[in-house]
Amino acid sequence: MKSTARAHSNIALVKYWGKGDEELRLPVNSSLAITLDKIFTETTVEFSNSLKKDEVTMDGDTFNEQETERVSRHLDLIRQRANLTARAKVVTKNNFPKGVGAASSASGFAALSVAAAAATGLKLSEKELSVLARQGSGSASRSIPGGITVWHKGDSSHTSFAEKIEYPSEWNLKVLLVFVGDLHQKKVGSTEGMAIAQTSPYYQIAIQEAEENIERMKKTFKKKDWLKCGEIIEAETFRLHMLCMTSIPHLLYWRGTTVDVFQKLIALREENIYGFFTVDAGPHVHVVCQEKDVKKITSELQAIEGITDIVECGIGGPAKLIDSHLF
Image (cartoon, rainbow, N blue to C red; front, side):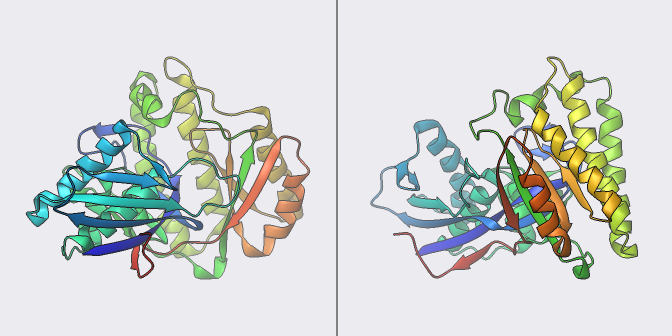
């Protein structure tokens, strides 16, 4: 049976920076993320006894041996569960706005998990799909439920999964993806950065702070306290990059333009325009704001030298099966 799935990418507002179990991809702390509607992956999977090996292509290009092996290992988890030995043909594509750059493993492995499970006839719950996707890419677990999610760190494979949480819909949240400079691959990737995180003297404190920030964030949702929510989002940015800057070797992902965006957003608060910055392991800034402030914030940020693109996103939905196949 042939099945196709679509899954959206996500960005963490409460972040994790380190793995407690490398093989199972268990994080050292829980995280909270927002799903993006304009950034998604579509993947078609078909198992066939006529294939001698898994065949994987993305956007028309065949995966290299290492990339195919990673996908095959993930398919093996599904084959084992479905009591299946057939190899698979996998075709995947990203529907990313211009300037977004490299593929997202979050949306990629979420879409792969949903499509491959369906192609084998497995009937998995949302939790089971989140657990499965996590084993391909940790952040993929958060792309399964959609919306705003909490990924529980767990202490075993079946307890480490993501689930959707409620937030004030009247906030009309938007995320502006602000790209700084070129989109070439960073010199030190997230996997390498996480591997040295424990060399920071603040490592254990940071882990505890992340768990507490999730509870704080949930309270801001219940109280509908937008400004306190933004305060936590930005505190999380500094917590992550404090770990990066104090690990050995030191990692500085920001550029001057990154800080210029921070300063502009802070200055706009004098006009009661509130956009809150969050930054992952790189120089690009994600601005969380309300729809009513998008136009003003975008206009002000476009005037900053060094910004190459700004992409507006809403909140994306859950990973799901779709009828349009890629082959």
